[in-house]
Length: 132
Image: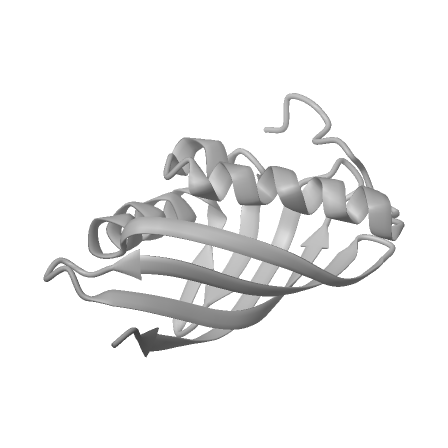
């Protein structure tokens, strides 16, 4: 159950959408799944590549496993557009695998927020690139 509103709230303009996106980026870069999932509705839908997740608990477990494999994870989100409660985002992140190989991941994602500022849907497509 939601305890509070997650400001800034939709509908967005580019300034408030960028502010909201920065808060999301900060939470992901904390590498703390609890900080990330508090931004999602209890029944949020997330697709991250080929992982289809439903609800905070599945998202949390996904993040725990992801950050055990994607070491030194650092995310950068770049807002492409915002309309009402939606955002289109370009992202990239750097990480190392458990054998210390470096990667960069590039992708796009869309967010849908509810009226209280929680993520209802987050769909991401991406490609990993081994840094040589």
